[in-house]
Image 1 (cartoon, rainbow, N blue to C red):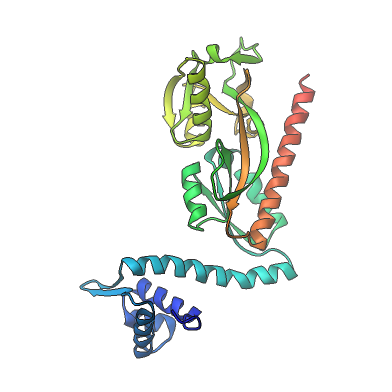
Image 2 (image 1 turned 180 degrees about the vertical axis):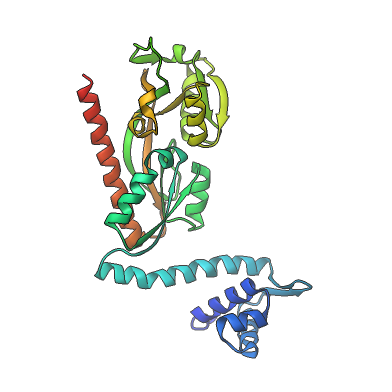
Length: 311
């Protein structure tokens, strides 16, 4: 392909045609004459040497090569559109859309407070929160559908940039009982406790499975759920117990009716702030990441303070 041929307008024209499903619709949407639009697409296909569009009874659709081109073109246009906001943000304050992924557990415990903090401290940033497991987050990061994510990580994912935020032991959380006096529980004892476990794949589930298998034990799983909110509803109903990092306990809604018991020997997990290893974070996304880091640091201090006051 000629190095000076492809221009941003070609990408916008192609995206418009695919989105509209016709040259006529795209011409009106892009405010470009239809003959000129057709000529540009003919030249584009000739330059690539492959058909990008196909006409059918339902209008114009991308070919297999066109679908690849659409995906990459959309990503490029999105980055170019964000470029102006990034430059302006550096000169003034962070602004623009930031797409943040979170595990469902962190979403339940911290999303409300963090969104409020972001609204106050970064008023020109529009935060879009996406909840999901590690597999979904990995896919969204790779496709640039989110900018960064905050989740528990079992094994490092290749090709991503990570910033560890805390490394903590898991604890048993369940309904508060009158005769609760234990401060710790062994893995052998834990195997007899009714547990509400996350469905696989899940970091906490992977770590627990490995620990139980290593001890030749099996967990007493009474239910499997795919969100922490669902697990919490079962815990509050007295059906079972959940296992979470200690740091989130005091931020669980209604935690006053729950008790926390440490697992001995400890089973640790690591929480990381993860982003693309190939695309640097935009200024606004970095600001959100810095604010989230501070938010977690404050939660850790709060956790340590509660620990000291209970001694």
